[in-house]
Image (cartoon, rainbow, N blue to C red):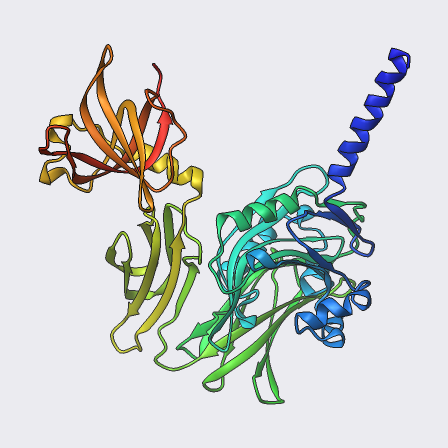
Length: 509
C-alpha cells in the first residue's frame, strides 16, 4: 500500500476513534428551550418524555409508575432525568414558563438590580422556600460563548420536616424559561465530586438559538421586600417601577377565600411605598403587581408568616451539607437581638454578637461532621433556634496536600519522646526492608546512610504495601506513635521510633 494512502487510512481511524469516544456522552436537544446538552457516561439511564414507554421494564424494576412519572414530566417541566445509581445521584433538567420566565425572559439582558434580586431571592427564602428548599449559597458564574450567566447554588430540600434530597443546581432564565440543572443526592451528604460532575455537564450546555427580547412587564424592583416572617401586624414595601404606575399588594390568608388589597402610585422617579396591615395572625400569600396603561403588568409572589411575639430572623447564608475550609453563617435579625452560634465537631466555635445584621466565619478545615446551632434571643420575644449539620470531606489530592503542609520535622532523638506522640511529622531516609504482619506492612527506614551502613532506624506501619524496593530513598509523612520493639540478633529487645504512615513520596538522591 502506498505510504500516502496508509497515512490517510490512519488519519481516518484516528478520527473515527475520537468520534467514538466523544459519542459516549450522548447529546439531547430541547426544541422549545432552544438548547442542548451532552449527558456523560457516569449516568447509566436517561429518561425523557419521549422514551418512558420504551423503558417500562426499568421503571417497574425501580418502583416508578409510568403514568405518574409522565405526569410529573409534564407538570414540572422536566426535560430529562439521568440516573447514577452507583453513587445515589440523579440529574434533573427542567424548563418552566413561569412568572420569573415571563418577568425576566433573559437574565443576561436585565440590569444589575434585577439580577441581584433574583439571586438573593434564593438565599433569603422568598423564591423557593415555600416548597421546602433552603439555599446555603447562590452566586453567578459566566460559562462564556452563548451560555453566559447561570446561578450556582447548593441546597437542601425538606418536606414536612424530613430531608428529601440535597445537592447542587445551575439556574438561569433564557428564552422565556426558568432553566434548572439539578444534581440531587439522596441518603448521603453531597460531595465536591458531585459538584464537579455537574460542572462537567454544564461545559456541554449550549443554546442553539437566542430569542430577541420581547416586550416585557414593566420594571418592578424592591428595596424593602415583604418579610417572610414578622411579629408586627404592619410592614412597608418599597421599590421602584415605571413612573405613575399603580402598585398593588393583594393579601390572601391561607385557608380563606377572601383577600385584601393595598395600593400606591409610583412618583415621577418611579419610587413607591405601600403600607400593609395584616388582619390577624397566620400565614399569608402576598401578590405584588405593578400596572401601567399600555404596558405589560409585572407580578411578584411572596409568603408572609405573622405571629405575635415571633422574633423575626432571616438566615441568608447557612451551612450546606458539604463544607469547605471556611463556613459562613449570616443573616438579619430584629435590632437589639442577641445572636449566638455554637459549633461542635473536629473544631469547636462559640460566639455571641448583638444588633441586627450578623455574620460568623467558622473554621471547618478539619475533616469530619459539624453541628451548628444558631440561637437568637430578645427580651419579651420567643427564642429562635436554627440547627444545621454539615460534613467536611477531603478529596484524595486535598488530603495529601494538607498532610504534607501540616507535617513537621522532628530530630530523630526526639521522635519517641512522650510530648511528641501523635504529631504529624515528615522523615527522609532509605527503605531497608518490607515485611507483612497480619493486615499491615512493616517498613524499616534508616534516616542516615554511610556507605553500606544504615543508622537512625525507624519502623513505619503502612496499611498497604509500599511500591518501593529496598535502598529506595523516600520522604515519609505520618504520625508518631511511641515505639516499635524488635528482638535483635544478639537476643536483646530494642525499641525504635514508630510512625503510622499516611504518604510515602520518592525523595531526590
